[in-house]
Every structure is written in C-alpha cells, then in structure tokens.
Length: 342
Ligand SMILES: *[C@@H]1O[C@H](CO)[C@@H](O)[C@H](O)[C@H]1NC(C)=O
Image (tube, rainbow, N blue to C red; front, side, top):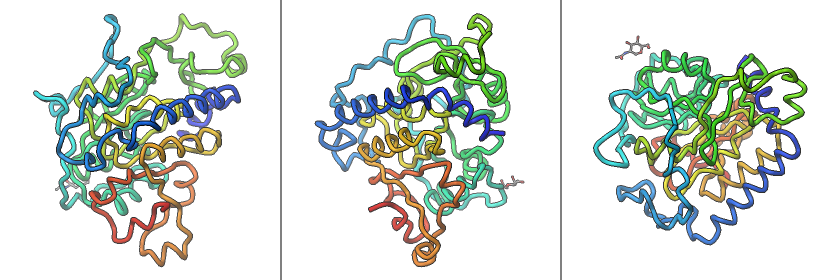
C-alpha cells in the first residue's frame, strides 16, 4: 500500500509546470552556491570535525526561519534526550560497537539492511532524520537503527492521522507534526487514502480529477515550516542518516537546506522514476553540495569488490548518497568506497 499511496501523492508535483518550477529553483540554488568556494561553505577540514560552524555567517542567506509567526502552533513529541543546555547539541556520537543482531530489518526494499551492512556498520547512537515518516513502524528505514543500535532521531510527518500513530509507535523519537516549506505557511491536509496529500501542493488538474467537490474548510490545518527552523529549534546540526520520502516534494525540500549549516553523512532519497526531471535535478543538487551517489554495481563488479550491490527494487525506488567527506568516518565493509561514482 505504501508505494501506491506514494505514487498517488506524488502526482501533483509531477506536472510539467511543477517540474519546470522545481528545475528553476534548483538552478537558482546552484548559482547561489557556486561563488562560495567549497560546497559546504567552510573549510574542507570542517566536516565532521569538532569545531562548531553553526550559524556560519558565510552562508549569507536571510534567516527566514528565525522569525516564526507568533501563532505558530507546532505539535511535537519531545523525548527526554532531546534539547540540551547548549546549541548545537551533541546528538551524533561517533561510537562504534556491537549492535543487537537479533533485531529484524524493517525497510520496504531492504534499505536498512544494505545501509547497515555496507555503510553504517556497527554504528551506535547516531542521529537520523526521516522526513515523511508515516506511522514510523511499517517499512521504515530508521526503525532498525533505533532498536538495534540505540540511534536517536527526528521524525517529521504532515498527515494528522499518521502523526498520531507515529508518536505511539516511536515514543523514543523526537516527532514533529508539520509539512516542510521554504517560508512559514499554513496548509491543509486532504486525507482520503490513496489520493491524500497537502491541498495547496496539488495541481488544479489533480484536484479536479480527484477532489472536485471538496472544500478547504473541511480539511485539517497543518503548519508548513522551513526544515532549518525545526533543526535550529532542537539544536540539530549533524545528521548521520537522512531518509527523505515526501511523495515528489524531495527536490523542493533539498533546495531549502543550507548546507553550510547542516552536516549530512548519508542521504537516501526516494527517486521512483515517476518524475525523471526531478530525480536528475536531485542528483545534480546533491552533487553540487558534495555528495557522491552510490552506484548500482553489476553482479560481476559486486563479486570483484566483495560488497553487496543495491537490490534492483531498492535501487529503482531510491538514490543513495554519501557525503564525500564522510566516507572515511563511516565504519563499513572493506572496499565499500568502490560503490561510489568516482
Ligand atoms: C535484542 O533484540 C531482541 C529482538 O528485538 C530482543 O528480544 C532482545 O531482548 C534484545 N537483546 C538485548 C540485549 O537488548
């Protein structure tokens, strides 16, 4: 069901106009990044070192998220570990050790098993971000890392019904009920199964096709906030594993990230092929931000490298990226660096 849900929800953003707007946003972002020297906007040695670069003034972009509207009413679940006396907090522990191998993998297409065996092997108490967390239980990429290796993290979900289940299923996680936009807005959740999603993000054509008679007054209001606002609120500046599956809005969200302030080591983005222009733009944007895409190996290459290749369904639905400065810090199977595109 998740994948049907997924492709239907992606529909509004797959229109030609939507794709054109997203490409334009990506182009603007790339040109904004270009003059800043390193893609991270700071010395190459700054990743993932100890010195804080939080609030780097080089970024030069207006802090739109610094001024939240007074009436912003964000539902959050804050576990005891979240929040700290200083910002940024030390959520990412860089610890290695044995994990509980009795815990089953949970991802839909084996993403967690692949990540664990090849890239995030035996990493304890690291930090994840899952955007589009749904109920946090079935087929989710971060659940294994929480249960087997004590990871902590941030789960964001816009669907009001799913958010309720999420907080029950993942009491250990920092949960936020919100959609993600580049400015503060209020949007509405139109939830009726397969064609559910954010009303304001649906194209007119999609609305007419599926929801001709519906009126916004009957829909649940959901705050839409910049991702950086949520990260700043909880002092998060390092994410070891980010999985991003927001039904077609991936490029738009990645375009709002200030890479000079946020260190991301491993990023899994849903690129299911329903919008090839978007998928290509995601790869281009992340390459410019210093990420290397994990390439699918042929079976011969896999045997030669002694590593597992990405399963075909997993590779069709997702793109895997590792920041080029993060490879050396990840405990991993031997020769896994052979997985990335040189
Ligand atoms: C390891 O995980 C299994 C399955 O979730 C659980 O039953 C067991 O208690 C765990 N062991 C430890 C030492 O936490």
